[in-house]
Image: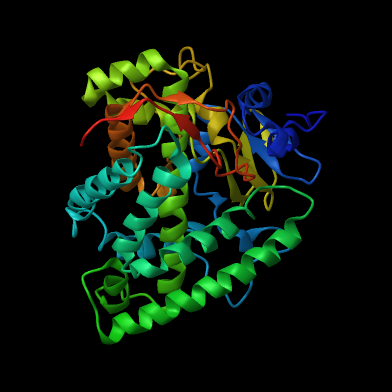
Length: 406
């Protein structure tokens, strides 16, 4: 272990390198565990990341940091920021209304609505020869789906997008302005919390078939959620449920346009979109790193001892391109065998919304490939959003010759 001079992670965090951080992630892997000047340990190789994702000595609760976390004492942390057993209880209560075993058809039941929304969005591109795939397709579908799932009125979708954008842009490990970003996130979070608390109150008196109604009304052997836990869970689902999917779709379309031979192959073989999305999660993951882990005890990783109380960054994007784990890691290969990527993390915090994100990306990318004729990039690289954690194009301008009928 060593402190890399210059600090490679700081260069990854710099927006100037957002378009292609992978050479820097490669440099990071040369030292599997790196100690930054602020005392944060960065882990960047596949085997070591997987081990820590499954290690109970690694906490996701920032209140375990030396000196405590920066969260407001009045805010309930979402279950992704908690450790077992409370994390497991809250996750089970949420999953009860989202997936197997109690609600096995929830995600697949959204398929017709996803396809209908996608069809209408692509229909709107007809008659034009240029479109912004982010603003006109990649954003509207996921936000519509998560709002429908939660039970948010359609007229409030634009407010949700603004709140989520503001929260996401404050994320990121180690920058000098962390305290200011935390204040901004808390201010926006409080506004979003008030809205969701009001919506949850209305569901208590008049429950519907949506997920929010399930969260506020269910009380079983493990109890139920407090009003504060309902709000925290809803905020988590909002951010995780559409911000990451926007980036997955945008990164996916950008990658396919950069590989026109593979785009044509997916058009000819529609079933190839399923493994293509898995390869996108490895090759251009929407979540580049996890910056919220803390060592509860001294932990030895690749010959380095990470002291108890130290913050840890898991560089997932570096791990998924680790040549000791995957052959020819910098090549996009939709037919890659045994694609064991870190696109959805791992361990007890494996991405809760993975089935939903996969299905949305498969539908949207499959339809874009099928219906756009002669698509080509207007600008490469496109402009990127500032966040180094949730990485994706801010705009993706594409020209095309025509839009095929649905």
